[in-house]
Length: 447
Ligand code: GLU
Image 1 (cartoon, rainbow, N blue to C red):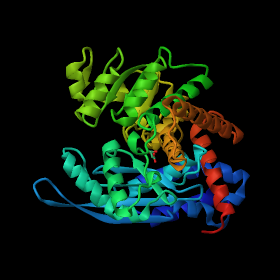
Image 2: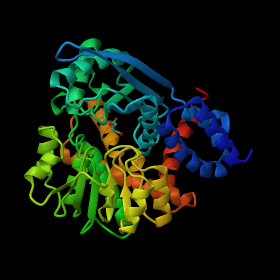
Image 3: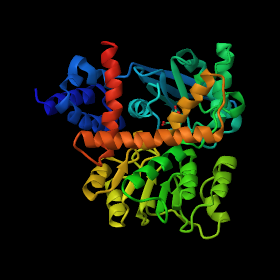
């Protein structure tokens, strides 16, 4: 059978067996497209059902999470943990608490995580979890009770050598604290390596909070450098205003760029003179308010409730909000306005159409599984510190992160070139991420 037909047959079967999971289909389609190029050279990667095994999670857990609100009403949410692939190390990936969460979303995230984690060069497998719980508007005590109920089921499935969750959308330092507390109580042991993103006094790592955003900035800086440019004098749009966006904005501005816009799910803020990062942190991290509060307090910032953040002319676009936030039409506007670099801080923020436009219009594009790998990479550094009962300095950890991101960019660039698609970092990331996992799976037999 021709490679194209072989891969199409695998994809058709996957669509049938995973009906109603469009985000998972999208993530797999993009990877399979790149794998055709590998299979043309090395057909043995299609042996022994390797591709089918890679697309089927090793284990999928779905569980009930009941909790009681401050008025005494009982709510029932659904919890998920998809343990996708552990060929390279224990399952590793975040937990997302957001009303949009369903099995398909967690599977797409877990699938992406396999390749992302492989690209870091560190010994971590891929997994993801979460719940359709909506933390918005909940009191601190409600969040705590929810986290405790969630962990009461999850704790038996995780562990330092088994599966190591962390944060994602809706799960930050506060939630990791409540989750760790409940794990420690149920397991009756202080097992630091079971979660990452912990507080500094109880096994956390310096730089973990900043890592995804900083890592994105380091990756993009390396991509700019590769094309003979730098952040100096560049206008940059960063969508979102959560943990990834805030520290991407901070580092981009330190590296000489001007961030001219950011957003939340309800509005976007234009700030042609740059972002006051300390003010943004105060609004989002301390007061947990909307971006409109930033506009009320910072001169020159303009709130937009209409139109799209991607309508604003810029040189570099860094989508850091959520999946499929940037579509083909947005990408065309970005290109028309002269934007020549896009790198993803969020997971799969560009639709397949948008990626097509980047290719057609010559936009240099860093896909999320490479560009946002700094978060999970620093989680793996946290695991190293936990395993050696050590804690590293900020500068040492930051330097390790920077080296990892530069390495990831170089790997994507050299792999794309090796396979005849120079400059296509999607193909580079997918192939490099895949080969390491695939070689490990082939060596470990049919399991
Ligand atoms: N949620 C982050 C990601 O998408 C980090 C996961 C982790 O640190 O395990 O990669």
